[in-house]
Image (cartoon, rainbow, N blue to C red; front, side, top):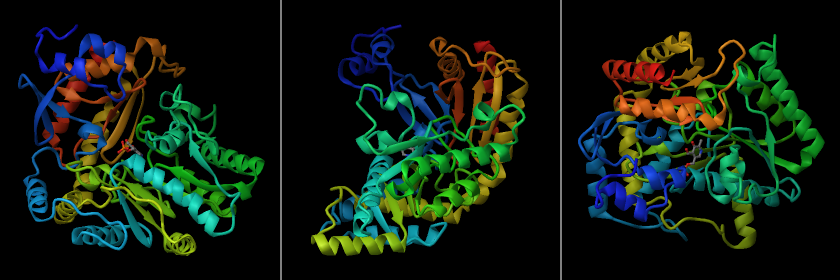
Length: 452
Ligand code: PLP
C-alpha cells in the first residue's frame, strides 16, 4: 500500500532516500515505518503507535532510548571540545580515557586501541593490519584470511568480502581475492544424522584444517569470527567448537580476530562473547553497545605483539598511514565512556544474567509451535527458525518470505523483531524488564499464529 498522504514523511522518504538492506522496488510501493521518538525499550511511530524495540534497533541500543546521562555526556562534550582528531601526535583527552577503560575491560591482555566510527571500519582496519604486520614480519605471502559461511562483518569492500551472506556480495563484484570461506557452525542445519554437537564441532575444525593445508599454511594470516554469529541468524557455536578451531589456528600460526560488534558489552551474559565461549583473540572489533548506539563509534584492540610489529613497520615507512577523520571523536568517546560507567555501576553483566532466563525460556516455549523448527540463543540474543516441516527440518521456499511475513505481523502486534531469512531474531535492550519480555512474547505468540 503506498502512503496515502502526498506530503507525508513516508512519501517524502520514497522520493528522497536510498534505504540500506531493503527491497528498493517494494519500498517504492510501501514506504517506511517512520519512527519519531523513543522511551525506555519502546519507539513510537509518527502517529504515536508504541513498539517494543525487541532488536534494540540493530542489536545496539543496549540502554534503551531514555538514558539522560548519555545526553548530558554528549552535550557537555559538545560544548567543551566539539571536535578534535588523533592524527600525527595529537589527541582529545577523553579519547585516552576511553582507550584506558577498554584495555582494562579486555577479556585477554590487549596492547592498544584504535578508534573508528562503524563496525565495518573496525573490521577493515583489522584486515589492513593483518597485511601490514605480515609485511613487517617478513612474510609477504601470509596474507589470506578465513571467514565463515553466514558470517557478518560489515559492508565496506573488505568487510563485505569477509561477510558470508550472498546478498552482500552478489553484483557488487565481491569478494576481493584472498578471502577463504569455511563452514557455518550451525548444528541444527548442518549437523549430520547421528552426529553429536561435539562431533560436528570436530568435523568443522577438521574442515578448517583441510582448507589451511590445501591452501598452504604459510599463505594464511588470520581468521575472523563472531563469538555468536548475529546477522547470519544468531548461530550459537556448538559445544567444544571454539576450543577445536583455536587449536587448529594455533598449530598453523594463524591469528584469531574476534568480531565483538554484537556480542561485546554484556549481550551474551558476559562482558564479551569471547568470555562466554573462551576465545583468546589477537585482535577484537567492537561498536554498537560501546556507546549504546547514541553516537557512532567503533574500536579495534590489538595484542602487544601486533602493536610491536606496527611500530616496527611505521618506523620503516615513516608513518602508520591509516586513520579516519572522526576516529576517537571526543563527543562519541565521552558518550562511550559514560556508557561504560553505567554498565559498571548497574552491573550490566549481572542484569543480563538475571533477566535472560525469562527471555530464553519464554522463547524456548515456542518450540512446540507447528511452525517452529529451532529456538537458539544465549544471554539476551536469540532466534526462532520457522520451518515448513518440523520433522524433516525442511525450510519454506524463500520466495514465500515467511520470515518477513511473521516480522510484519509482529510489528502490527506492537513488537519490532528482525527477520533473517525465516529466522526471527530478538536482541532487546539490556534494560528490558520481565513485564516487557512478557509483552514481547505475547506479541510473538500472536504473530506466529497469524503466520500459520
Ligand atoms: N560486525 C558485526 C558482527 C556486525 O554485526 C556488524 C553490524 O551489524 C558489523 C560488523 C558492521 O557494523 P556497522 O554496521 O557499524 O558497519
